[in-house]
Image 1 (spheres, helix red, strand yellow):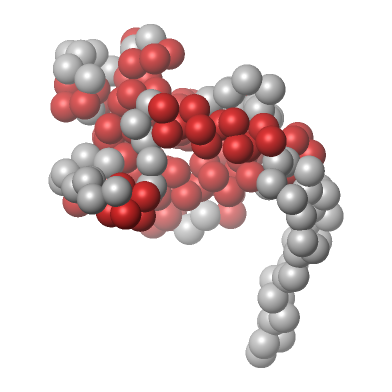
Image 2 (cartoon, one colour; image 1 turned 180 degrees about the vertical axis):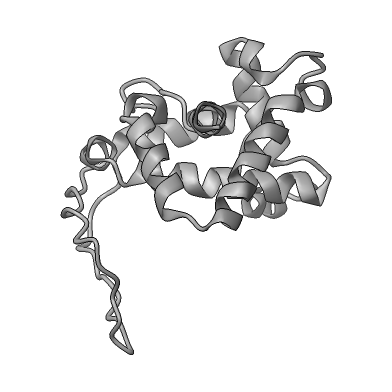
Length: 172
């Protein structure tokens, strides 16, 4: 099951230029930790979503084989299309995968260093129990050129925000 989940999570965050992909960030250890810390119902949902991701290229890129056999470009297109599929249930299953993949990717010191953020301190392994937890306030910072370039590349591929499409008068 871990390999199935690992593949699906890594598909949503591939390497882009100098920005490392999730597969390069000790993903095996992170998936093992996720499985250990998740409730059985959350883990079941993640595995189900990974299985659906593996079996749905026929719906998205018109290929009658599992996602593991897609080329890199087809896999990227499959990940994008399944995450924005008209069927609500499919989109919600992919949200579960993307949410966890994003957390695992964004917490990595390599990614945080790339976008000029300090690494998170080690997890103390405890839970905060104060009635009110003060929100973290990050210092102001300028846009990172590498991320601006990445955003422009995604716009060139036709992947822009719904808000931008609405402002331009296009239906998403």
